[in-house]
Amino acid sequence: MAKKNEYIWKIWLRQNYLTQDVENDYSGEVSTVGHTVRNEDIAQRIVSERTELRYETILSILNERDSIVLESVLEGSSVQDKVVHIAPVTQGVWLGSDRTIDPSKQKPYVSISPATELREGLASVKMEIIGVKDSGAYIGLVIDAATKATDGHITPGGILTITGDKLRIAPLDGDGMGIFFIDSLGESTPVMQVSQNDPKKLVILAPALTPGTYTLQVVTRFSNNMTLLKVARTIVYDLPLTVENP
Image (cartoon, rainbow, N blue to C red):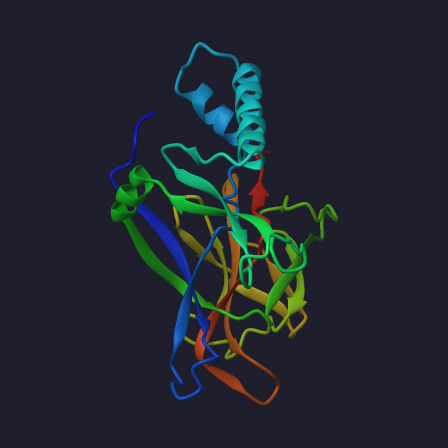
């Protein structure tokens, strides 16, 4: 398969509350929303490379490989491929040379480390900060008023209800604050009309979006009714939103 020359990881900044002496201390969290790759996805990518093998055949081989890797590790063998090295190890300590095993203190486990090719590949990864993440703020559901759909399908130019917590856009006219639809190329389309702006509910008029898949983001400094955050946080809806062809 063809390899990219450069990879980009999207990074959320999360306030680090363990370092009490530093007020502006953040740790990074890689955004993996919508990026979990399973055997079905791998098989489809192999098929897309114009292989002569059928999708069902490839998927069967991948699943069989997983079974063999699992059984090999459970048998006490190490497994090495181009991505990771898996080695059986133990957790816990033995006091003295007593050969008695206490399952509550000593347990079988595995050690997983990156293989050489993966370690070398990480040198081509660049990181991009996409915002500050706060676990107390979230988008729980997006409801399309026209169709009542909650599965991510939305009507362009239609009314959407967004529910969750700490969603209020504050300040509403603040620079960079608002609700945005991000397409697959990273282009951002802002929401121009917000008819309800509450902490647990936003009612908006969706932009006239073209067919495609979008990520919904809410950018706000709202914390509670008395306080604004010093730095805006970005709240991302886990479910991609889809505009279908008419």
